[in-house]
Image (tube, rainbow, N blue to C red; front, side):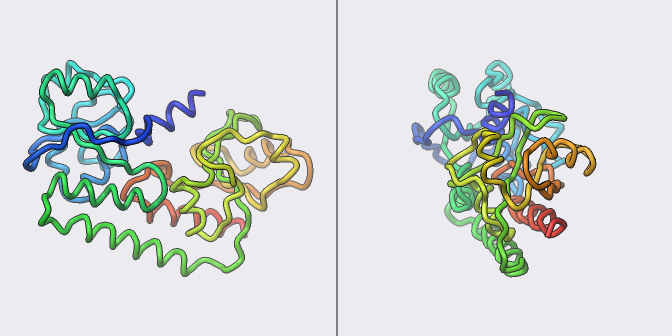
Length: 277
């Protein structure tokens, strides 16, 4: 359960996005309530406008000294009131933040960039419109670079596409509590770009039943987010009945952030897959 809460906090996914209040004019100070949006704003060149970050922001390094204001689910409203930003950028339904913004006259806007690849790229363009205005070309330039990078990775991978289970978290030192990303997620898109077929065909993020895994094993397993040695991973996965599965590690700490580092994420997946082929 803790893994699911963390994942939702990182993605900023609290439900469908609905615009409640459209800001006017370019903001000089902004707080973005998802790491993906903060990273995108900085990649677009607006880091100087970010006056605070959430507890889940880890990149880029130059903004990590900014005040932290909790997260979308548990915002520090007192600190927000002191900072008094020109604009709050939200995604999903968060009544506490929206009611507070309405009561204090804070301007809010919605950006949704937590699902498929295209929603992330659209979100980057939307952020550029909000922060840079209609005449800015930063969003177009950034999304073009991302598309070019992803296309380059897709062209370089072998034609044969193994079925891969991407493990986002599991119980330490045990074969259990395995969470993965299925259809309709940006990680599903990135697996395909990296040269794999996603073993997880069901939609969204979910826990993998071990009996299903034993009955229909993938060709490869890629694990993210733990520091286990190859020997420890092999030991854990040896508990699964049948032939031993090749298990590799994805070495990129930004993999679960649906933001501007998509090319690095796809490259990390392709490299980890290449080590197992």
